[in-house]
Length: 98
Length: 153
Image 1: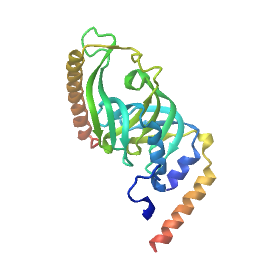
Image 2: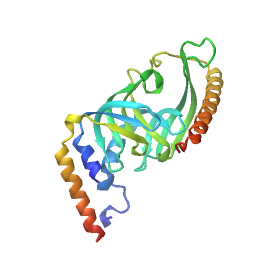
Image 3: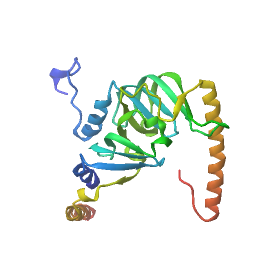
Image 4: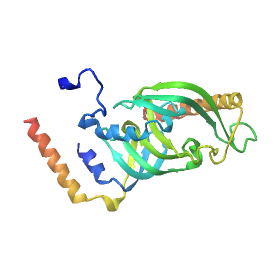
């Protein structure tokens, strides 16, 4: 659930989502769920001319399973907090394994 | 279910907490006109009427829109598109790439650089394009495999 929580901290920031079919969609992250499905608003498509089907689309629900990368705004990532959360998550799992 | 609730449907169904956000995202899109991109590259336009937590979808008044980019036919400088009426669609969630909500103000404008064309013409051009791409992809995979790469999928 770490990345679910992490993406929740990025809500209302602008991100670029790259899908497995190479299309890149930039928009405001509005929502994310436990499957890392992503809802973007006010979207714009990188290389729009190659993807004419997106021209009238203003917001998109992207299925988590088709995402290749999410490009994040570096300024919006609290690295020490993420490190702490990662260690905490790891220690929980280590505890469970015993 | 508490006994009082038996025999009549609840007024507003309470969703389990773990599916809350998926549901909330799809709930916003219900009864709206959407563009659905499928894993096989198809684009559907329709009204979302029902769905579940896997993003299985039911669409009404569905149209499939096919596109051919410029340069598919000789001397074709602009892209072409056409719509095929498909009716009601039930889409299994795993095949969904994305759901896009259509801005109704821009819905009637053709995509930039594209013109509406005859269905049969666009169909045959799209078929030709697909065939060309298949041959190209095959050559690419073959070349990659000689240097030790396995293709995606």
